[in-house]
Length: 299
Image (cartoon, rainbow, N blue to C red; front, side):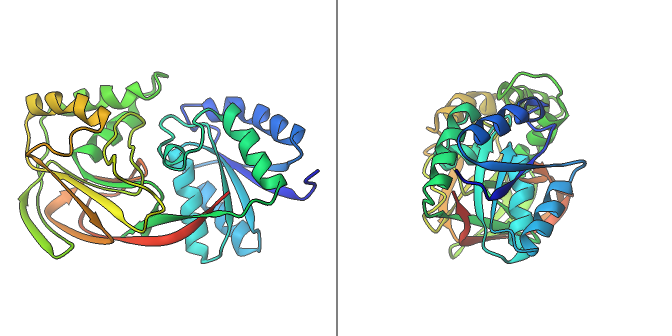
C-alpha cells in the first residue's frame, strides 16, 4: 500500500461540472488501488495555481490533478513559477483533455486512474515533458493568437453540456461578425513575416479544442514547439478547411505555414485575443513565446 498522502488538486467546475461530479469516484478508485489522495479543491479562478505554488514551495514533490486543460494550465503555472521539480500525475475529467491526449493518457478517467496508480505504486520514473512560456505565463499544450483565441473565448461562454462539439459551435458563432485578421510582424527560425493573418498557433501537443488536430506533427517531448499560422481566409474557406483541420490534413494547404520552433516573437498593430491552454488571456499586442525543454515531470 502507498500510505504516503499525495495531494489531489481539482476544479469542481472543470468539464462543465463533470470534474466535480466524478471526483469522489476518482478518490474511491485511487484508494482502492493503494493510493492515499488528499483532496484540494479550487474555489475561484487562479486558486488552483496559488494552492499548487504554495504546496510545491513548501516541499511537496508529487501532486495529482483531476480536471481539464484549464486545471492543468493552473497547476503547471503553479509548478513552474515555483522553480521546483515536481512529479505530476494527470487524471482527465475536462472537456477537451488536449494535454492528456498529447501525453497518451486515456481521456476517460476510469481508464487513466489504474494506470497512474500502477506507476505510483511501482515508483516508475517520471517522464520529462516540454512546456512553453508566452510573456509571463506558462503553457502545457498550446498558445493561440487571433481567430482561434476568439473561438476559444466563445466556447467558454457556452454552457451547454455537449462535449467537444462546443468548440465547433463556437467556430460558427465566431464567424457571424467576421473573421478577424490582425496585422502582425512575426519572427521565427530566421524568418520574418509581416501582414495580416487569421491565426497563429504555437503547439506543444497535437490537439486543441478537443477535436481540432491543429499540429498533427507535434510531440510534447521532442524539444520543439510547432508553429502553425494561417493567412487571411474568409468564412467559406474556413468552413472548407474545418474537416481537414479535424483530420489533421490541413497543413499542406496554400494558406497554411508550419515550422518547428524553439522561440517565436509576434507583434500586432492593435491588441488581439490570445489563449494559453484554452485559458483566455488579456488583449495584448506583443507576444514572446519560447520552449522550456523537459520542464515538466509526468507520472
